[in-house]
Amino acid sequence: MDFEERYEKCSQLLHKYNQQHLLTFWGELNKNSRDKLLKQIEELDFKSLDEKISRYVKSSAGAQLPENFAPAPAYPSQPKTAEQKGKYAEAKKFGTELISNGKVAAFTVAGGQGTRLGFDGPKGDFAISPVKNKTLFRLFAEMIKAAGEKYNFQPRWYIMTSPQNHTQTCEIFKNNNFYGLQSRDIFIFQQGTEVNFSSDGKILLAEKDALATSPDGHGGSLKALFESGTVVDMKKLGIEYISYFQVDNPLINIFDPLFIGLHAMDNAEMSSKALTKAGPLEKVGNFCLADGKVTVIEYSDLSKELAEKKNGDGSLVFSLGSIAIHIISRSFVEQLNTGGFALPYHKAVKKIPHVDIRNGDKIESQKPDGIKLETFVFDALPLTKKSIILETIRSEEFAPVKNAIGTDSPQVAKKMMIDRAALWLSQAGIKIPKKPDGLIDCRIEIAPSFALCMEDITEKKDKIPQIKPGDTVYIS
Image (cartoon, rainbow, N blue to C red; front, top):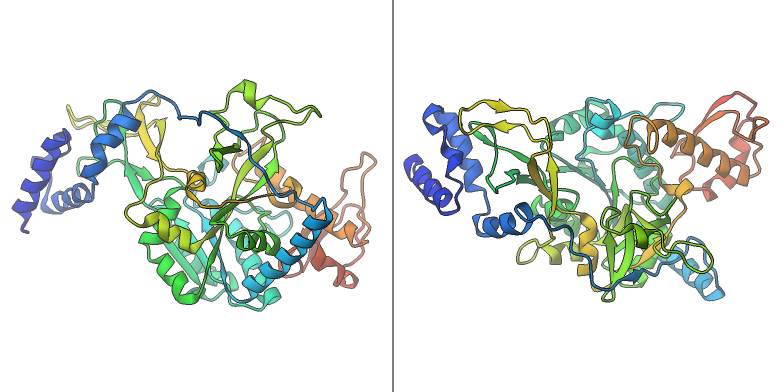
């Protein structure tokens, strides 16, 4: 198809779907810019465009909650009965076998920038460890390498970037010599994008020759795994399970034999870790059971009355919060993408810079007036045949780095990293100096190569030096 035919076809489609304004500045564009614009228009999914605009863009209705839902059941962080103890032991053994046999891969969702942290670059390049100032990417790489050595397998690491940070992320890994891992064992790919809209359903132009787009949300990771060829790569390598986590959590336990084993033993397709919420209104999703299916209801969608509802013992009825840690079966990702990807969209009203169609001026919005559509990974849970939840302990596995100060800040995450290291050492019989008020009086960092969990400390305790008040200690 020659250039004029392409233009004519795009023009007809745009008129049909009431988006002809995208060609407003055609007469001002050179050949390269025209080709660039046509390519973007040709990639639009026109078949779903009208429904998407009607259902998600123009609609003012909020999220549709299930008519009836209840708290979701979960495995406790520690077994409570003899039967559970037996199952946990069996699951841990089975999970260890799966890891050792190369059946599990790490998958990091790393499309975010460090903007909210005051950091100009991919969030994975943000320095966070309390002594050595290691970046998140370096910490994860060291965890993955250490797991390979501990369980005697060749680890595979999949990393999803966004168009905004893909090139920079690839350069960071090359410049750091892939953090000691083999480059062939790291697979970096981009997530997809969705076009941005005005409130009346018009696609926005970012430039006269470019549509305004944004990443399609962490739910898009399940689509990108398929479309990037990642799933094919996994199948070729015999990988059956995907350990999914987001880039902002330095306490992540990537290869957890218990979690992996329970998921596999129960024939689950996508499973989740959860924690007890710090309070009824904590900004995490709520695990629920609707029509027999595990479902996450966003904190903003659960009424204050339900969020604060309590059991007879004073505990919250909806106490389990979602922390974006999952085990996903590779076969489920394949199934989800067969016949077209179908997670629901969520509408976000944002400030979106765009071109004014009337005069070609660039508009920097002063208030949220543009619409982004994104998908959430937890919306795949109700689509599974089976999904389990394993409760975990916040101080052991969850210290997200999201804000420059206050809650979920680097200061809080570093303190949690020190506290966890101190707990591991004290459980092994190592004395930790404390101030009169009970706070830890030292800075400690444990390298993943030394220990990936508390149990790894015991057999190496003779290698740990005495820790004195005020010391800064790096154990490797």
